[in-house]
Structures are given as C-alpha cells and as structure tokens.
Image (cartoon, rainbow, N blue to C red; front, top):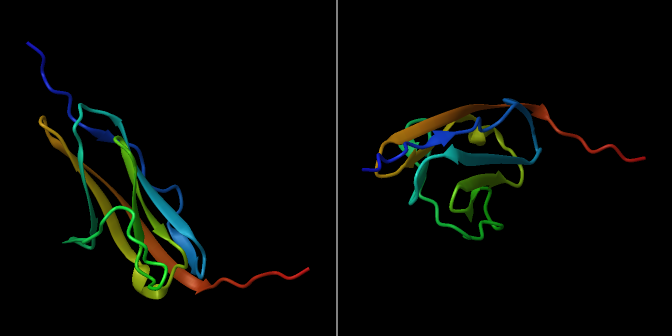
Length: 115
C-alpha cells in the first residue's frame, strides 16, 4: 500500500521590502508531494481570482502563471502601495494541504538612474 505524500513548499521570497515601481515575482515551488497538485493564491486572507496566462498588461493586477505541474507564480510588473500585504500560496493534493506566505511591504519610490 502506498501512502500519499503531502506537499511541501519552498520559501516564496527572500526579500519583503520593495520600492514602489520595482518588479516582483513570487514563485510557489512544491519541492515534494504527490501530483496532481491544486494551487491557490491568497492575499490578506482573501482568495485571489486568477487565471493562468491572463494578460493583465492593461491593469496593475498581478499576473498568474502556471510554470509547470510543480510551480506557479505571481508577477507584478510595477509594485504599487495597494500591492502591499501578506501573500500565501496554498497547495493541496490527495494527502494534505500546505501553505507558505510572504509579506510585501512597499516603501518609497523607485527612481531610474540615467548615466
């Protein structure tokens, strides 16, 4: 008899402080656990309604990308103050669910250096 392996998630981000205007990608990588895996992203306790491959280039909403069967990401083209918050990746399979969070704090303004 084979016992299902619960998912484990790598840390989402090494950094938590971002300047307004910077880019950011939060990647949710499942380092172990049986497939199939179901992914969800949550911000401040509310599930984000995201679809893979959606083109949000006309808005400043984060873009969701299914990278492969073990990972997804949220891509921010330009961080803004309202993006600040606690982002959680929730992954579940037939064995269990796992969560990993990262806090995003937006400070100051990013300025380009022209040389």
